[in-house]
Length: 519
Image (cartoon, rainbow, N blue to C red; front, side):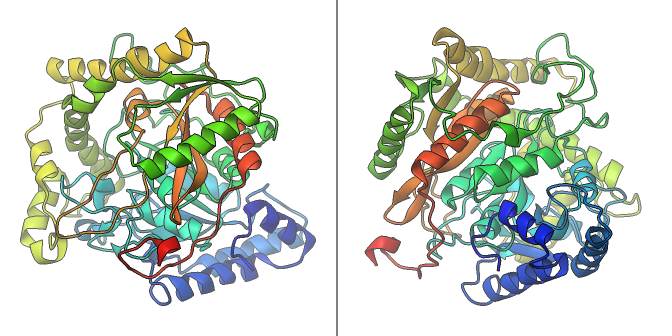
């Protein structure tokens, strides 16, 4: 009933009475039970919503009364376990330190999804603390959720940190999931798991109620098996929120800054209106050739994707490179800024969203908890990044402000914006990921490249879409643009998706030396 079925198709089935919201929710729960801890044991879920069927019944009653809340009414959605909800589920970022810290209020986007009629089926696993705890971590592992694995081959990384969201969507636990990204955490797992991911401009989607890393880089975004579904989900989570500093209309007159908004309020747009199969015709796209130290297999998929863009009518400027690329690769300030933000931002979340009687009040408390529970929390890797973050100062330190401004310039005026302007481009493209590497909890992640950093430090959007496969392992194509260019990027990505239609369902190939197509 739900395997490889789109949210749009489920909408049609619900409206026609082919099935009920309860039957749809139950199908998702059955699929999760069959695939997550049994069957292939993907480990994508951290918790099931015990009230999912009750919510489904309430939404069925509304439909029977002729009341529909819109396209997401009755559609199952999964949330990453760093998005606060006040239901009977927890919000822990995968950490045992936050077990029992039930939020006092919901994340803005969770409220929006409920208002839109979505059925929140459960919380997905993630790289613990969104992968900011250790420099030798493995994506997809958390102390609370265990290990999430890639559905295309079960000993390959799902990437992260939105590992569970990507795997759950790829494996049809639900048609839609919300992930979060600070640098690559939506785009990379989406690419590695063969799905679509949208990382919005900082300020388009509220971050209020999301366990943070960096207020200048964090965002939530949709993950789906096709661009149309992702655009539908984006519609539901966009909204003005005065509790998000990037949205509260406070303009920073000097650097550092949030991306400049198109107006005082966010424009009321429908991202599904740009889904044009001919959307690439006449578009000018820059091809980033040296932004990844990728494998030959990745480059071959990229070559075919470039041919498809050209065949669909795009005008390509090829090759291009960022003038700041070498500095972005070597710049230690990029990590330092995230750690500086983490120390303050995590404390602010715990103060605003967690009961003041809960013992974990700041990052230092988490570090202490991990040391005291090292057997459970640190069996594979430690917390060196947390410890580095503890050494950072306050956010009004002139050294910090200068550091953020310099990093933002690398991604903006010396990175994405200058290429778009000088070559009169609608967007840039690059491979999203290399083929998923083998999981190695003992030695940590084997990083094989990514293309998200310029957009991450700029606060700009990314849309990644399946581009092809290397020996059965998915590789994505990322479309990059300037601030608030989501409409353009979605149009281009949808046109590419329709021109290529390369996505294949997961194979759940057994662990092995060889990738799926060579076993």
